[in-house]
Structure formats: structure tokens, C-alpha cells
Length: 104
Image 1 (cartoon, one colour):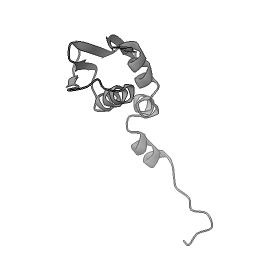
Image 2: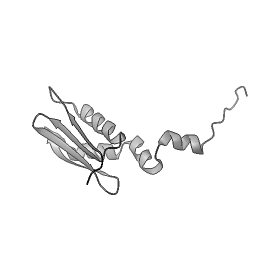
Image 3: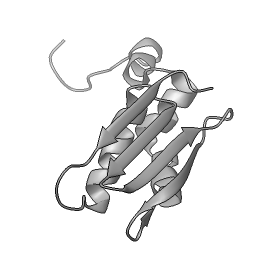
């Protein structure tokens, strides 16, 4: 059963592929494990499986939920979060910034 469900409705004209993917990535980054995107009577549902991969279903015309899921699964920021939690926090905690040739 999903713990963090996010719903978003695109109002008005059909959203572009970029808008749908951007909104899905934004909701996934917020920690959602179930995303329901709607546009009129069209829908795309994205579910986070136990292995941390997104599975998509549904359509907005030619844009399928499986395509949106693949895009989220290949998002570098989300991939880093899976492995390291907060990517910038990981870098701050594990790397030391060294300035070469500048004033000390």
C-alpha cells in the first residue's frame, strides 16, 4: 500500500511531454511512492515498486505512463537519492573542496 500519494490535474489544453515528465519528477523528488496525473478523462499512474523503480500505466494521447516511468528511473538526481539519500549532503560529508592556486 502506498504511503505517500500525490495527485495532479493538468487543466486546460493538453500538457506537453516535457510538462508531464517535469511534474512527475517533481512529485517523485518530494517523496511520492504513487503518482496520479490526470488531464480531463485521460490519466497516467506511476507506482514505485519495492526495488525503487517506477512502473507506469495509462496515456495522455501518444504519451504513455511507461515512457514517463522510464524517464523518472533515469533521472540522475533521483538515482543519487536512492543510493545516497541527499546528494548534496553526501558530497559535503565525503568530499573536501581544495582550491588550487588561489589565496589561502
